[in-house]
Image 1 (spheres, rainbow, N blue to C red):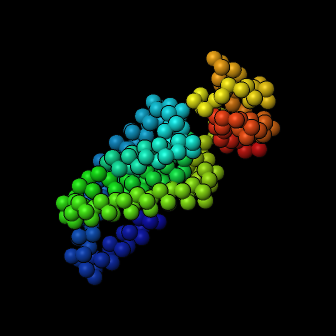
Image 2: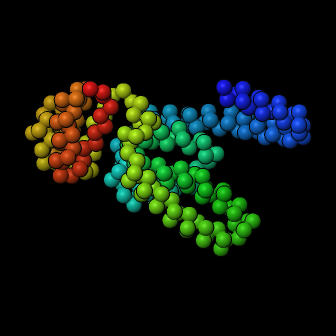
Image 3: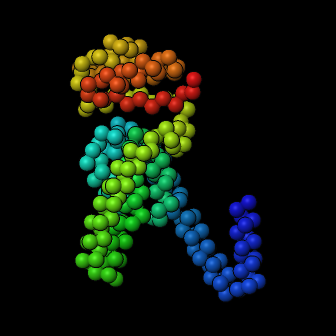
Length: 233
């Protein structure tokens, strides 16, 4: 349907304004070539990210508990990125699925869009370093505010990009585990102690067990348990 609408618009332009139609068509070809060149690289990067980067690393670097460190890492990742903004969306989806927080995804997308390093270099060239510095500071403040508000108002349950997984996720972050063994006492069929830390031995696959897992998440003193239940009752 969309292709039909675009073709109709081009046809109308060719009739009423041939010069504008030619310019529009050339611009469309330019962006189409850009997408053909960029998207395969981005998809390859997401495959590598999915297959080789441990989820635990994403949780530590960009997860809900990464704090200011995670915000800074997200800002750096977005600022040092390459390619147009639409290339950021598959990367963001992969990061979300591996445990990145919504706030940090907002920071990555926003930095990718408006404060990439190549963009800043051109801004200095045409508008001067003082203009760039002031805009950068104000933009970063706005990005952090947007990240906080979005992370407060939107949950991962609202996002189809995260909820399209068919299996629940249950993990214990070793760095946060205090070794109290409370989760093992509550749900020994899912947890056990190894080297003084709790580890997951079975991921639940029923709503009844899922309720007990949520209890271990709520009662964990170190807030070390990550649980994402996508199994439908």
